[in-house]
Image 1 (cartoon, rainbow, N blue to C red):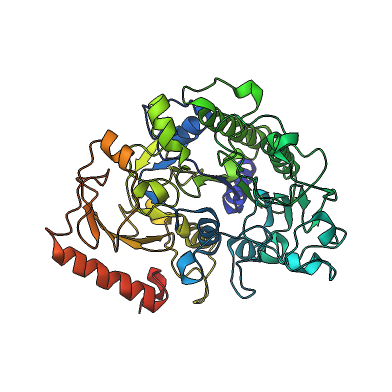
Image 2: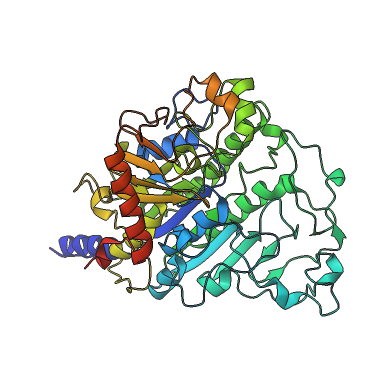
Length: 489
């Protein structure tokens, strides 16, 4: 009897434990780059394929935007970015978070979590706080900043107990920032001539301060090392952890390290994806080795579709990074914002399940809140839907509508239909190579994704009733300021 009581008590305590949460967020990764999403992919991704076999793979998951900053903001707030802004944070740009905006890590802090972010930030800081009075207006030389001072309004101001990384791999300052201070003082200007030769495309690095000896090739290895260390250090911690690991890759510059050269059949970009998958393998192994895997929710996704180097890659290697979708990063078409997404939630998701329901990264916040019995206030996560019933297999869908936008035009998805309320961007050579018809006529574009996932046939002229319906729905959701079911009266 005592043994039974002990067993039941231990089981109850284990079930009552709050799960750790690990978010793995890739940068400019295409829907068709992973083998588990595209069997024809020429890039091996063994660790992500294994994760998909252990968890739930989503075929219709979306970011809020086709570019970096807005997608990250929406994911970390449960709110569409376009309610507040459209573009990215430029070099030395300010924070996109208002002080009163509840973030996912702030919510988790209130529930007893240790929170950390490692990798790319790209959500802004108050750089003016360390800019010297003697600096020219908006000066960006090393001597224009007092690097001994803390940089306010960064990750630590918005819910993260610990932060390590850089701003963006191709933005200044080119140095490591731990919490709110640089680890080494930038003492020179960025000069790509001092770096090892790039392997594909262009450096695309914006000018600005750099630490002498800075090596962008070490960005992914160093952040991975830090991530592994952080995960292992939580083994005996009293609090559960939330780690938002934001990869610098495979975002340009495309710089796989030498040992990964030739690992794919899609050129250096493919090798960079392979290296990213290897990094994910190291992080997941750290979870396993530290005995924390069985109590950790793993969420993998990406901020948007692949960069426009994908056009050349398609022609040269016959690998289309957004397969089977139309569009890339910045585009309003599916390839710009439909992203590979996997969730492994021990005790909730079943292994190897393929889920075809429409979901969004914006939904992560309401889902985690529901799991923790946290009541979201009305002025938080206004567009976030609770995916928990979907993850448990209790329902077939949670949301029927989603709005995408980089700037103009907007696109609204409702059921199988998607309306682009304007005209999307075009690459004439790619369209011709993939046998797309000439559909330049008409003020808007309408597609039925059930029968035309590749968005080849604009049927707006044939279905004006759907155009009118979706335009009205788009207007309603934009004007009412929310779309979360809990806020519907």
